[in-house]
Amino acid sequence: MGLAETVRKAVATANRTTKDLQVTVQHASWDGTTMDEFGKPKLGAPVARKALAERRQKIVKTTLDQVAQAQAYVAFLEPVTITAFDQIVLPDGLTGPILNFTGFYDGGTGQPYFAEVWLG
Image (tube, rainbow, N blue to C red; front, side, top):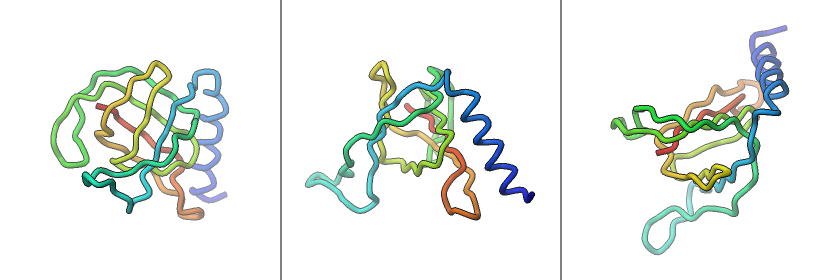
């Protein structure tokens, strides 16, 4: 078994074993091209996704290489593509700008194994 398959299995195991801890968040994605009349990204309809979510105040470096205080951390343990213009809403209604996001891509599928997001 190669490294990619090992990571795939590890993420699948983490997803399976944390199902009871995961909440449903709403994720509205930006398609990468469509803007409204004010130059703001137009988002698609929200999609319900399972994720680990934690209220956590933490200083993070943003995608624009600035420093900001995050209010929440969200981890998707299934393939999901995130952009800085997406919107994520936690079950209690908390939302905020996406300050930063990470994900480790699967060379076999081109999709991230998982995605981590910090909301401002």
